[in-house]
Amino acid sequence: MSVDTKVMEMTQPQKDDGNRALHYEENLLWEKKRSDHPGVDFPPVAGTKLRTGVGERGAIGLPQVSEPQALRHFVRMSTWNYSIDHGFFPLGSCTMKHNPRLNEKIARHPGFAHIHPMQPESTVQGALGLMYELQNWLAELTNLPGVCLAPAAGAHGELAGMMTIRRAHEQKGEGKKRRIVLTPDSAHGTNPATAVTCGFEVRNISTKENGMLTVEAFKEALTKTDPDGADIAGMMVTNPNTCGLFEKDIMEVTELLHKAGGYFYCDGANFNALVGKIRPGDFGVDVMHINLHKTFSTPHGGGGPGSGPICCTEELAKYMPVPTVLKGGETYKLEWEDDRPETLGRLKGYQGQFGMHVRALAYMLSHGADGLKQVSEDAVLGANYILRSLEEDYHAPFAHQGSCMHEALLTDKHQKEEGVQTLDIAKALIERGFHPMTVYFPLVLPGTMLIEPTETESKDAMDRFITVMKEIAYEAKAVDAEQYFHGFPHSSPRRRLDEVKAARNPVLRWK
Image (cartoon, rainbow, N blue to C red; front, side, top):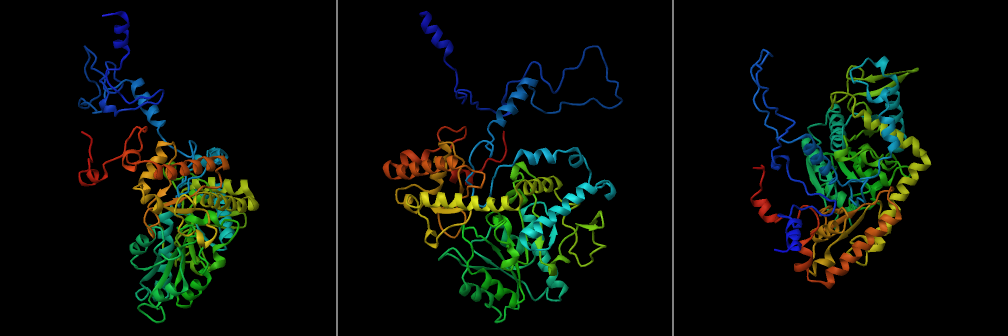
C-alpha cells in the first residue's frame, strides 16, 4: 500500500457524525463514551471508610463524562438556539421583537433584582413606585383606568379579564343568566378555551367572507337564543384581529353588545399595532389584557417569564384581581382583599412578574409618547411592505380590504396547485436560513401563513426575507415538488419527520 493510500485511509472519517465545518452535531450526554475521569461519581478512595454517619450513597445515575465533555455538550447545544438576536422572526401573532439591552441593565439593578416579594412595603417603596407608574402608563395608553399587573402571561391575563366579567355579572345577580360568550372564528385559540374555563358557553361568529366581524353576523349571534341578548355575558374580540385587519364595525358591534348588557373583552395580543395611535377604551373595550412580553419588548416564551396585565373600565375595576398598587401622599402600598372586598381575589401568589414590569417601563420611558406612536407605525408599515411585495406571488385573501395592520396574511392556494403546501414552504425557509412564519393559523382559511415583521426589523432584513419567499414561489412552479420540495430541510441537524408515523407511533422516551 502506498503512503498516499495510507494517508487517505487515516484522514477518512469512519462514521459520518453530522458535523459540518465548525457547526457541530451533538448526541445526548448518555450516548457519550464513559470518561476515565468523570466529574460526577468518583471512585472510592482506597484505605478509607465512611465517616458521615449516614449510609453509603449509591451512584447518582448521571452520565459519567468529564468536565470538558459536559461543558462542550451544553455550549454546542446553545449554538442551536435560534433567537431574535440571531435572525429574523416572521411569526404572526407571536411577536418576537428585539429586547433592548438597556432594559436588561435596569432589570439587573441590585435594588430591583435582589428584592423579595415578602419584604415589608416600607423597604420596597422604589419597586412599588415603579409598578404604580407602569399602571399609569398602561391606563393612559388604553384609556382604561383600572390596572392589575399580577397576571403572569397572555392566557393568564385572558383568564383574569373573563373572571372579572363573570364577577361583575355575579355581583349584579345575573351570573346564572348570562352564560354565553361570543367569539369570532378569527379569535386566538386561547379565547374560547378561557371562556369555557370560566364556565361560559362559547358561540362562534363566522368571519370567513371578509376576515372581519360584520354587524349582521354579530346581531344574529347576539339574539340567537334571546331576542334581547339577555343571556350574553360578553364577547372576546382581538382588534386588530388575527387576519391582520382592524375591525371597522367595532363601534356598532360594541354598542349592540353594551345595549344587551354584555361586556367587551379585547385580546390585547395585537396591541403593538395600536399603541400610541388608538386607545381601546375609545372603541368600547371594557377589559383587555396586554402582553408586556410582546408590545413592550420584554422577553418572550423561553426568554420569559411573560407578563399579561389587565386594564379595565372604572366600573369593572372593583372586581378585577388583587393586588394593585395605591399611592397615598408619598407612600405606596399594595391593595389586597381587605381593601377591596368586591374583588374576585388573587390569581397569583404575589405581585406579578416584577422583572417584566421593570423592562416594560424602561421601554416606555426610552421611547416616550411619540416613540411609542412610531413603534406601531413602523410595525404596520413593515407588514404592509411585505404584503404588497408578495401578494402577486402568493394568495393574499384579504388584500382587497386595503391595508393590513401589523401582520400580513397569505395562503398556499397558488402553490398547492403545483403540489407545494404551506408546510413545504416553511421547511424551504429553514433550508435557506430563515425561521418560518406562523403556519396554518388563523383557521379561517386553509394553508394560511401569518407574517409579522416587528418595528425592530430593518428594511434590509425584510428585503432578504421577501427575496427568499419569491424564490420559493418561483421554484414551486419550475421544479418537481415531490423530488425537490418534499425533502426540505436537507442541511439542518434534524430532517423532516414522517408525520403520519410520528402521530401513530410517537416515541415518548429515550432508550
